[in-house]
Length: 268
Ligand SMILES: [Mg+2]
Image (tube, rainbow, N blue to C red; front, side, top):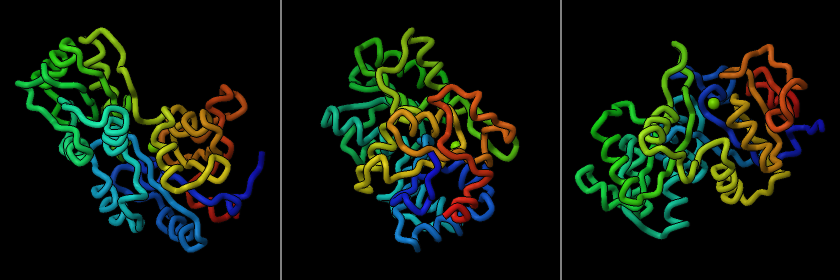
């Protein structure tokens, strides 16, 4: 199915490996986003990274010349908070994660408990934590043993940087899974479709009107394919440039492949 990009009413972009790599912007990314906005297209930003609030991501995007509003941003910290609020209304959480995750939970009315009160938690929420340590893992295990639900913001094993991969939130999820002896009850981030679904709801667009642009086959592309959204793979991130799409299992096969996000405007 060949579709022209001008047909779509909305574009959802992954950040890492698509708009930037580490702290370095992908060449032409800001121009493409501005072009889409000038054409009247809706633009949303979607990321598994739970170390930034929506506002933080707006600031981060502004730094690489991309103008979006907080309401256009769907990070897994925000998504997790929204999910818990919608499913359970309220509750207490202990977290393995950074400040942004706690902030998004609090903004949604989910209280964040100190480790000493772990047994009172309704949820254990796990995201990337760059100061991950034994005490918080032990508190999370106590919460789970006392009946808390195990909620993973995402399971990314690695994050790409200019200097090569660094450990992602999936490592913290795996640590808790190992000692809790079970999988998370819920995973919010890609390849689960939740973040894309809330982005589409917010844009008021259906699955035929949206293109998902990402660099990860097993995250971005799988997520979009699962719910029938046009999936666009870019080769500026984790997927090797020598990819052979026809050899991929159907669910990982992108609808289109571009060398870079820059080429979106060229196939108009
Ligand atoms: Mg990515």
